[in-house]
Image (cartoon, rainbow, N blue to C red; front, side, top):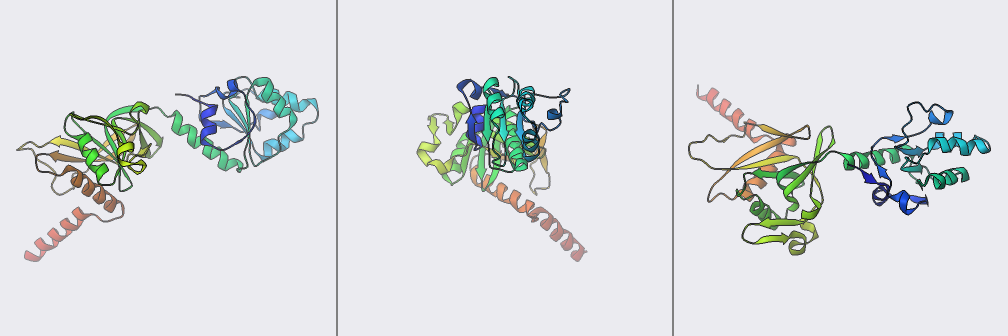
Length: 307
């Protein structure tokens, strides 16, 4: 997956020093950002011109100390036609030679008042997210009490209907039917809708409805973490179901394990209320309150007392 320089400018605020229509269409293919200190000394053996080139105080000071034509030649070696953008941090003044090189290479030249390290982190985080490999899973992704919940189950089990009921109860829809999942970092997996399905939900017998139009902007989100998965399964008499909550299971997305709750579905069960309770219980466990452990302790104390 790639993004363009224009998409970077939409996300992060810069002062544009030089740009062109073709320069904005240049593709960024890696989240790595280069601060070309060693390269400016002439060592270019492992130089990667396809990265964004970020100039902080150290790099800028070195450029300022290179006299005359050497400054232009030095920058021309670093900035190639493959370079997507040059960024100067800390609001530092941009040398005329850098502007000339940007025009010669048709490369966007940007300036930011942000400190170099903070700017580097913001750019890398944005590119990591956008360039991450996406996988598609079937389900409904909701934000419930601030927890990202992916509702899954076999076709026709009632995932979208449950999602609609949760929306009516004040929770927010992220994606219906198709959820694009990607790893944000080592511990976090994110989900977002396919662009064609954004803010839409499909109900058998009714068709496609626009959640944002019917319920307002507060009923939708563009993306969310996946903190918990809820798997809806048809209730079958004779099957054994977890009644104490100590049978913890997980499922994996993009290399990240996510806790899973399995809920049997049958006539008369209010699935949306049960999911809300599961989410509140999940939050309580994260805060150190575990009702299952409390019950087991009370049971152990009762057995010890009666014995």
